[in-house]
Image 1 (cartoon, rainbow, N blue to C red):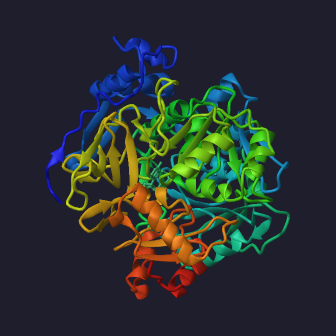
Image 2 (image 1 turned 135 degrees about the vertical axis):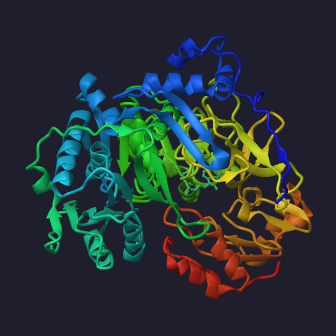
Image 3 (image 1 turned 90 degrees about the vertical axis):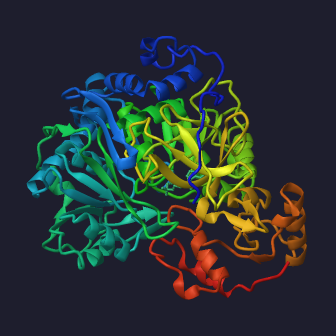
Length: 632
Ligand code: WT7
């Protein structure tokens, strides 16, 4: 890697024209000379102490005030925000809203069967949380312990997370689609004495024996002393001495539970990454900075207002669920949807039927689901009334132009801004997104666009990626996030990005996915944008193609068409050398393509596929391996 950094001037980054900022962000009144979004952005990076200090005092409720806004040195891996401050995250997410609007709906639990949703008010959620907090204490959980939660999205899962926060324990939510081995790995790593789960899960019309998976997992986890079991279905499951019936025991507890005063930098939770680029890594996020950043991005990236219904269809087992189903929305006193089902249950109209029935105002989903749904055609969307929608969000992968256009034109009827939000489990919150900015400001399809307040991206030139203006994306320490991979004082994200002459950012995929063809560097997102059927490229260029449901085409014809499209839109050198049509690609449980697995298959290194514990459908790998290589 070359060491020549290209310093970035983020001043002129198109954050918007003149716009009355004080009516948008109350704190901005105190920032002298700031009158528009662009000014506010500049202030947030140039005067970051004043910016974050004011925002933290205004938006969070503190038990004792902080004395230092930030004390960071990335080159030493030191990141400390709001030192001296004490607060409780559950108080910020619950108690203060119960004081002002106890009957406001906090959670809409959108259960698997459409039309059976359950609404939970702030008062009810606080009660559940306190009872659970008291139960955890009775079970011996103490401040600093780590509780593993293996539950599908449901109110008791959210209450469990908040109960941990209330009593000062950390949580470790494991996606309830993971196998017993993956769960056991994470329980052992977190050294949990307590696991919280449900008897069974219900997803896509199928019942899943989650408790049985936990039983298998804890056999190999000596740290586990008790498993609290909630009842999602009526079916009884075998209970052992270790198991505690959750509802029954929590009903014996008091509805008041004293919140613990936590230091700003105490651990809030542990979470493992999705494992798309290697063995899943465990990440830690802390209290104040994380909460402040998720609530601020939730408010401004999505333009969330009091009374809106926020629908993030991720699972709570991912960082997206932590930040934009639970902590961000609840800190803002919002109404947030917990989606238990799948995009195609009972049919491909599920999301939009739900949008109509619940009156969802902001919809936040993943490109992988959008691409899946667009294959089924527009009717599934148009059958439902989507007039409540105001903002459409995308996260997790680059969104190719075709999917972006469809999301915008068909789902949003051309009237809702599409916010393509770039961030990572490590960052905990959205770092690059088209908003906030002047509502009139331009959004370019497929571009994440602008850095959020306090984010100062830097583009790093590496030997892997040279020329063409495509560089690695980094940022430094101007925002209260707790991620540092100290590298010359920057946090290195591992993603490639373009910066346009207007200063807009486009993410071109993971750097480890960037390939070098005849000396030209090519990002996977770039090619995938042209070869609209989802694909990936490898050395030379090896394209895996997944066809739209309705497409019937000879492989020779397809190969010819792909080559023409690529050479027209990018260049001849980028044309595929091999093409293989597959039914589906190997993806992680969170929907990311496991490119490293495809790479091994192409290299014929199928004995070294690496960690597959987070793979969604093992058959997809077999299919890719057995499929023949076809020369274009
Ligand atoms: C990686 C992080 C962000 C929470 C969910 C995934 C890719 C994420 C985008 C986007 C292009 C994106 C990046 C990033 N990614 N959002 N809008 N455009 N790429 O979290 O599992 O930690 O993955 O997802 O490659 O580094 P994660």
